[in-house]
Length: 332
Image 1 (spheres, rainbow, N blue to C red):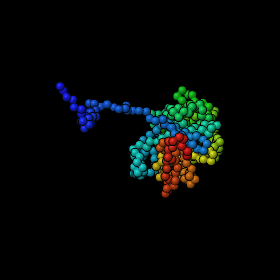
Image 2: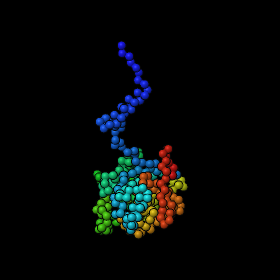
Image 3: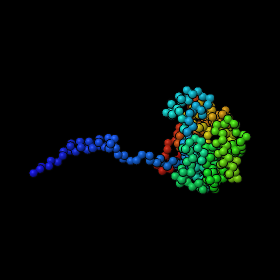
């Protein structure tokens, strides 16, 4: 007769532990969940008065070595500012935060990303995908408002098939920018990546010329949207004050590309500026206005989703990202 003695609790725990340890060995490696899961949908909604704002992304835009893009500033100072803010010192990565404002009776999109051009790599050109993720039909866009005619702001107007991505939209841009960036004779020969900027402007702006309204400084281009001239980055670079039920948000386009390098020392110059000195003066003037009046801003290239405030700090400014609201729809 064979007697069976049940294992004690200590023996069970010891055996289980040995099994877990064995499974952890290379020969017994079993992944609990597959790697490479898709990223969460890249959009964020919040309320501005009675309007609903959605920020979608055209993808990240890696500039590369910050020393090549940010000028008239010592390399050691660039490294210090980035290191002090826990940012990589060898690659300045910009976001492309595209704003869609639904006023109820009209839907307005601000800037359109790189489109099909891969000058900055394969991580751009995501706008139509992220609009779909956010349940926004491109055909529902009534107006496309562009801050300027650079490749990463007008590049998503027309698809590779030559068809308009926003077939029912009226388009808004500064006339000086339209004329400058579609004219081979106006762009300086040494402008960075010149063929890309010229080609993308022509490919996207010329096909929609019949639906373009050329805005002017201080013009209310649509109810609740006022154009404010901030030239220098391009000849007619413009920012926009957006208002709904007494609440304001300023879409600043490329007034500042980087929340540290162009705010701590706001007269730092940027390699893609048409007039770097004028650009710096526009930056200081407009950021001072936003800081004094405590107006929230949305910056096209700041860390996702690019919504926050600026305050004066010494000779420069400091950016304060707004807390992201995750319970229902956030309120700015």
